[in-house]
Image 1 (tube, rainbow, N blue to C red):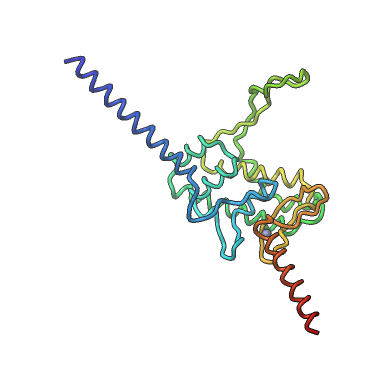
Image 2: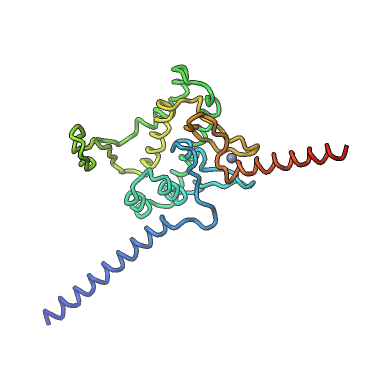
Length: 249
Ligand SMILES: [Zn+2]
């Protein structure tokens, strides 16, 4: 009798464990499965803060918003590799959709604040006078729950390199922590990038931003596939039309 009872108990525990694994896998797939209603987000900027600006764009005419709601935000953060997958799954599992939507709204507000800053200052070096404009981002950064740990370094035969690594961690206590890697990417760009290299794609209606890290600083397009080839085709058509007009004279 006793043995029957423990067998049943074991079966129930195994069944519950299976359900839990299934649920976790489903959840992971949900975050990992690309949204088929939209193309994958753009990561063409050579900088994560500018990729963040490009999370709304209209590369083929109508606008695509990759941060439309909380689940979209988790998806985009996963593609951006800014937050460990396990943390994203934890937020998806433990946070209400309403709360995640609220964070997505704050994220879009941060993005549009940053777009205004970039649009105003791109193309010229930044000076300390901009500090007053940076109050909102500094206020956000002050909420950070970051701390450092000493972890294992990369396996390396270089004797000058430490076997240990100074790593930054974060306590992911509240959903608004999802904003932190974005705020840090913005702060890093503002303090470390040369703003004269911040460019908007030359495509006439293209809104995509990038940091021009090309050797001769001659990058013009978001991608050749979208705006570069379009411009080439237009130039080719115009050349042909000009040649035809000339031959008819
Ligand atoms: Zn473009």
